[in-house]
Length: 412
Ligand SMILES: Cc1cc2nc3c(=O)[nH]c(=O)nc-3n(C[C@H](O)[C@H](O)[C@H](O)COP(=O)(O)OP(=O)(O)OC[C@H]3O[C@@H](n4cnc5c(N)ncnc54)[C@H](O)[C@@H]3O)c2cc1C
Image (cartoon, rainbow, N blue to C red):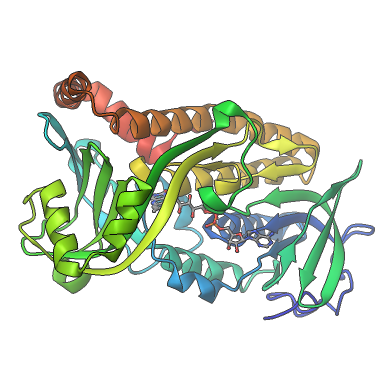
């Protein structure tokens, strides 16, 4: 699929013409820019509901879904996200997380969160970014969504009754008219235009080094989060090589990340062992190192006129608590609900923004606090953090409330 004249999933659409189903003078009721996991999920949910509502939907991406296969990220998807994704499609290669072990290096204090405490089959699941995109693409492809692949969206122009969006594929540029435009352009902190508000932007001065490591004494279905003076280390079970493979997310200064990215494997594994400890024996292998600069970039408002933002386009978070995609999926689900309830109208967007306010605020703040609190290395703070982790063990309602916020967010 290479150009704007031939959208995937819309064989009835002619070259650079408005599709028959569109209501003049609009080409589409809802146009989604970005077919990452969040844009795809929105397209899928809308398509299922619009079977009865006859919404015409466009989905635009500069890339093709196959391109996501090379993305090195492993993502922890919460049980709450699984519940909303399952009616669309759930990837077959998900590895369940039954227990999360949280600790800090060089200080006392640790806490355990177990799925049995919550009466759930799992706390979450580990998935490759490419698997999520592939599964959701398979859910969207057979629907009536007009999917423009290898097509870039340019700057939109708001009008009183809709939005005009220039889109380009190769040499061909077309101007689409849509009633509602959804910005699901996502992206990573260092690539994004910054939100422009002081409260919404923070460079953590950290880089996440990712890769797949193998260990000599695996603990199947256990995820690990270990706070060190340089930043958190997460190890997520991937189920690979008979449970010995873990996805590593090692956050540290950009300089350290650049140095570690170049280290010979043996030296890298030794440093990782010194930072993480021997809870899973020795680290025996590292594959596919890649780096992601980290920061917070959050919009103050999700809606401007007839344009709404969801997913990383609305808020890009530090991966410390594994919340970015989970929060983005809740954005998309709430927007699908509001558009189904009120149609492609400003009322739908206002309803969406109002319903998302609390969950966004809590998740952005808690992730930002965690990213900063656990990386400042004052000895007194280490003791306080140890007390906080220990206290969680002895005050089950607080631990339960925190775990449920992480898994399900706030829904209204
Ligand atoms: C190291 C790391 C680990 C992470 N771990 C977790 C985790 O454990 N749990 C979790 O919930 N989250 C995690 N995240 C966050 C998660 O990866 C993001 O929140 C998620 O990918 C956002 O999805 P998205 O669809 O909003 O954006 P993206 O995945 O960035 O997709 C955006 C899409 O838009 C397209 N696009 C962009 N601009 C245009 C344009 N102008 N025209 C056409 N198409 C365009 C792009 O091609 C892309 O396909 C992690 C992030 C990092 C960096």
